[in-house]
Image 1 (cartoon, rainbow, N blue to C red):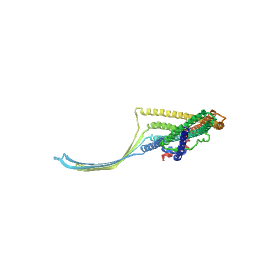
Image 2 (image 1 turned 30 degrees about the vertical axis):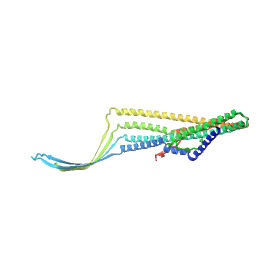
Image 3 (image 1 turned 90 degrees about the horizontal axis):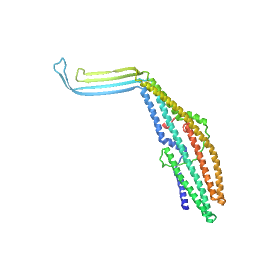
Image 4 (image 1 turned 90 degrees about the vertical axis):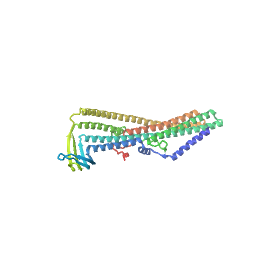
Length: 447
């Protein structure tokens, strides 16, 4: 039984080494680059930016450029004609009389509405909102990838902890077995050491499943297949301490969702102005060129050709439309008020989120120092317990207790590092600094 366990553990180690050699190495920067290139949410958001820009261009062409249409027509006919004239007693018959008509007309129409300028400004704001939404998608993707990446790093570090624990259990098992064979201890101590070793081995095997799940989650965010393998060899590093005042100030300037709420307020105001300007008269200008030719073998008129220009214009305004415009203006005022309230609500929510995340960040940093000291004590205690157990001074319960304390202390230490990193990611996202340095940075993914 013991030999089979050793062989199984050896095969696991060989598989890990082989995997590390074959798989491509992945760091956080490379993961973000792959994610921004392949993530489907980012692709859809970038396409929406393109659609908004197309709408803006269509609006400019519709509102400020004339509509020019050209029509060319050519008709032929062959008919039998019978004509009865007043001054002729006999009718005039023409068999197979041919006629043809050729028309060419060009028409240009230009209409100017006072609200057109406001409409273009509104379309411009909608294009800005679309680009900000795309930047939000980019930042959320970067935050999710960073969190998933460090989650994988955390699980790999936990695996290393379990390997150390398994090594301690192996040493204890070897000592217990040697004592049992030499008659210095009973079989119960040896069997207990065997059970504890098997339990630690089971934890390590289960951790492999946790790691694979973390890999699949990361691959999903990167937009790649779950079976594609990457080798991650990294540690969780804590950056310089963040300052609350800087985070709040940056959020007001660079938080893209807050800027979207501001633009939506501007759009609501422009929609109201558009409706108000519809009360003003609109100007319509038109002009055209026509060239018409008519040929006929029957009738008094054998040929008729007309060629020339025409132009004109009008001014129109609505006198009464059943108070529909007034109701639309009232509705637009309510909508603008709602966007004002939504902006205020988001401002409070954004500030509250920053304070919550920063409080968690500060507490986690304080706990980190405690966990580091606790880990140092646990390491020293485990070393002493192992030596005492080797010399036969301590029993297996004392050694196992020190071993469990070391496992717990190291797990809490690396979990504290991950918690701080999670808070850092969230604070950088809320402050708008997780990927873009400024809110007006160009979205390079549009290239």
